[in-house]
Image (cartoon, rainbow, N blue to C red):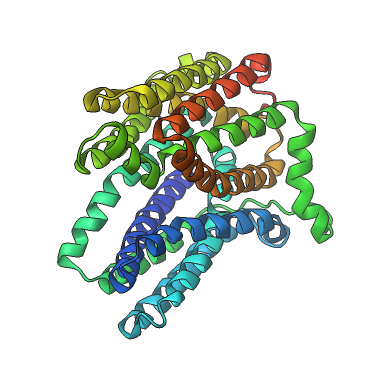
Length: 401
């Protein structure tokens, strides 16, 4: 695929930002744990991030009324650059008495980050031809998952040679470079022809989703899949490794890594067989949902570490074989000018659901055992599969260029 200038800039700029996101989270979690010695305090980091991104996804439509998508994305990275510089200057004065400032910084960065993901997803169809959309989504997902897989290892390794403060300065530099690259994108105006009141602008995406049958179905699947996906958070997976598999913590890293390898493999399959996937969007969505459900249930019932690695890979593969075609369906389900608010709505649904379900899965694991939550996850994915089967005829391109 010959990538155009805008897609190259968007992919490179967001990739640098994603690398920076992981590095700064690694440094923040390290600092919080070093100061407090509390795993609970460190575990609050993803909760704060999720909550802030939910608020951001909900309010982003207000900004879309005032700014074009390019400057909204570039501006969010500029804001993150400023916050990281301020944080780096503050860290030498950090103590156990004022470490709460770290949570404030995390929240503010997540507020800016919350608008970046839906804006990026909405920009891709504006920069890529319709027939290249699935391949563009596959490339984006492959690069994103490679970064996620590699940078947690790289970030923790960098702490051997760099201090947490130096790592934050490095992150600020990455965010600055990302801002400069994204500033070079062509403008894409998402503002309505006439100004709308705040409530209408906030609810516009929700109304579009509720009135579009395929989006309503995907939103329902998204809720079920997000609840099901909460079992793969680090805390629950760690308990599964120690209690169900009865192996040491290195397997925690192996299984987590194998899941990301599966995601990358699924992305590469979509890239390699783009035309085949394009012709069978609904079949890939349905098949991916069914097999990820089966693999999750088997994972929860299994007691052999090597089999757990294989099943973790399969969950990642089939999840991605469903997600990339599903993303393409969303991007072609409504006119391009409606995509920004649609993605902020789906993002808000995902973030809100994940925050609640992460807590819920932890409670259920304590009450009924760690295996039960993986079986429950598989059953929820089975329900999502049934929803996909019922709506398989709607999973196709409905808006053409």
